[in-house]
Length: 263
Image 1 (tube, rainbow, N blue to C red):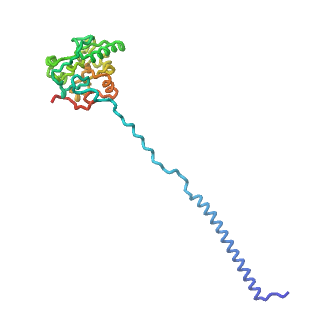
Image 2: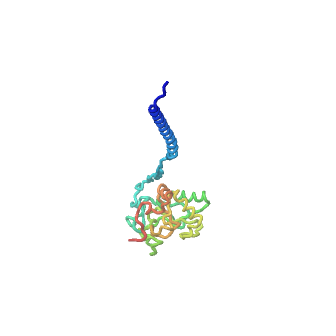
Image 3: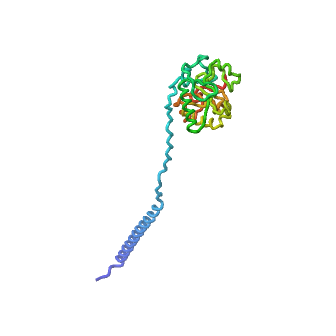
């Protein structure tokens, strides 16, 4: 068989070399692509953001339930002198000035001066005195109860911090009693507030419908100095409501203006 001519051999060599170069180029491309893919995958894996929870605002605190005042402040008149809620102070005189209750009765308790009160208040005083004796072995007495307009004229001494003017005294309502110890110790004196009898009354009078009318820290509201002996009957519902809510004066409970002085 005859040898191909040198020209043919050179062409064949050129084609073979070209083919080899093409194959090498393809191989390089494939290897580069694979390598890039692997590196890219790793990079992608490392670059992927770590899943995190979406921040949520803290829930707002629930507002406290609204307080609904269910106590009926209009159950009794504050102006009618026969109402057990009548408010008498230096701005609110009795009407008429010489008013006298029609249902006054003698109060069957130990006393300094014969006590008269309206029937409902009298019954409450008797129950309260009995409870003081049975619960705490304390013995109470009345120092003063109902006082008429004329009687107040004789008592008023011009000291507006300690004595009411005629027609402006709660005693005229027949719903008030000045209470002391049966021993007479500290009668109508502020030291009564520190005695066992005074402390018991302060803490328990509301159970029987009474309030301590002139507290030590309310002179600017009531117009009177502390009288730990002066208890006013308003009925158990109101006395209990005031006790439970920590409101100590009728003026503040009913939203009336303070009465530190006469007009």
